[in-house]
Length: 127
Image (tube, rainbow, N blue to C red):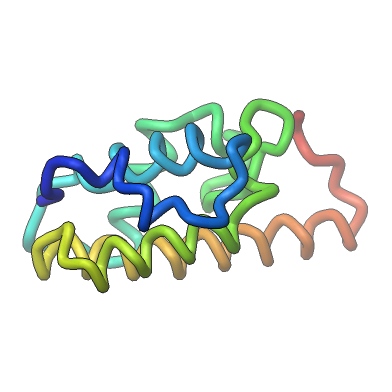
């Protein structure tokens, strides 16, 4: 689903902070390992992230809620969107992979909004 060389292509990682690179690479590689062409929907990809990357999410919730203490990823979601858009635009992935990445972008934004909603309501986030 993803062409070789994406991890080290400097054009993809231009203006991306060094602290963000490892966690962004981890999430992209994990998400693009999701291979169920009939189920590239947001819900299915979100469940895949929760099961494959438990340190990215607060497991107390059924939906994906960020876990800020275990990974730096959640501080760099704009950079994640930038890198994934570059991967799609530079044809590093198949059309199916592009669909999964777009769904993942949506999942990450929704998870961040969900986290903010819970914090405003007084729910103590898991670190």
